[in-house]
Image (cartoon, rainbow, N blue to C red; front, side, top):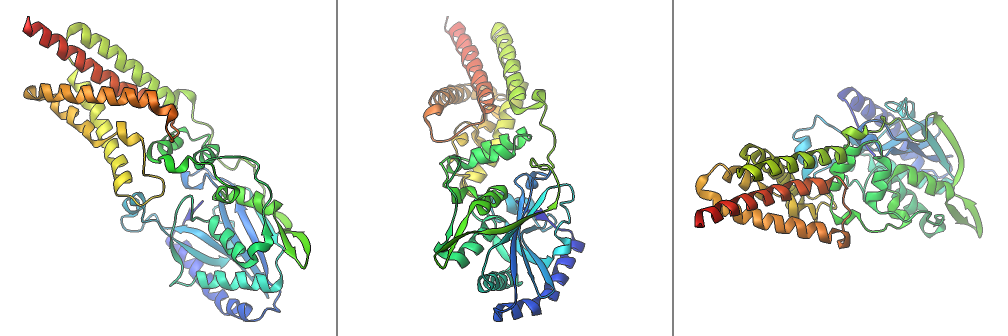
Amino acid sequence: MAGSSSMKYKLMLVVALLLSSINMLAAGRDSTINVKVSLITCYPGSEIYELYGHTMLRVRYAGVDVVYNYGIFDFDAPNFMYRFVKGDTDYKVVGYSSQYSLLGYENRKVVEQELNLTPQQAAEVANALHVNALPENAVYRYNYIYDNCATRPRDMVEKVLGNTLHYPAMRDTLTFREEMRRYNANYAWQQFGIDLVLGSGIDYELDYREQMFVPMVLMDAFAGASIERRDTIMPLVSATHVLNPGADTGDVLPPTPGWMSPLAVSVAMLLLTVALSVYDIKRRKVSRWFDSLLFGFAGVCGLLIFFLIFISTHAATSPNLNGIWLHPFSLLPAILIWIKKAKRVLYFYHFLNFAVIVLLLVSWPFLPQAANMAVFPFMLCLATRSLNYIVIFSCKCTKISK
């Protein structure tokens, strides 16, 4: 739903925008100019940020041919990754010559839909896009489900057409998470990460308009949409062109091999944990190195989950039920396992941890948040090691009391 830009690419965009500025202002003032507006949809690419496709608006008139891209961001910006995780996702809209519109999309299917707008409506869209792309207006706070490269063009067209625009009937009842899983089908670890860090806010049923956060859904919605004009019903899209051929599935990578999937890894981890726990119980001794690694890793992951829940401004990161079992407090057993005087404190932690995880596992089917199946074996790993410590500690206490 977005794209990055190098310095050379950004300079090209700025120059192209400046060259089109004078003509664009003229078009905004003169409704007799034959302005054409099109929606351009780029199918999914292989990079993570390309998996949902991309949307642009194209404006043509009087020798000017400009596309407006709401998905420009800069990986090289200071503290980009931290600011992105925190939710400070500043994207910008840039207008540039359409001869560069396929730059970066050479291996992906690209479809253009010409919109059936009146000259005045098309001029309004063109002028609004130009004003929106001015340096003082170009930056906006991107939101991956509510305010992105697809929703912005949709809103622009809706604003001009008002209640004369009618979308077709909704075909599927989906949640944000289910929609994401469609496009992440070949990227099991990407989806696992989404399911881990995004909470119940993406698990409610969407109306058709909300589903349009995905560019291909917006394209299909526009293809079936109609507009009222002087008591006449006509299609929103007057013509459709394939600008670049490609597969409907996009230029995505092959599926993650089953043996490398999160579920396979988590099950293997659980089997190792159970085997080691049985061995520990037989010898009445805890494998401290394993608990330190396991709970230490869980604690670090918990720090990220808690950061997203309590600090990040990203949509749908809070509330998140994964924060109940994956939390920073897991760092305590990773450290206390090496301190002899902390045995009773550690016993209390593991008793509480085991009870919480078992209760969460039993109740999850009735809770409002969908889970990735790979999560449950990981949860059982922590519960198994807590039970392991409880059993060994209880046996030693019984032996001492005798």
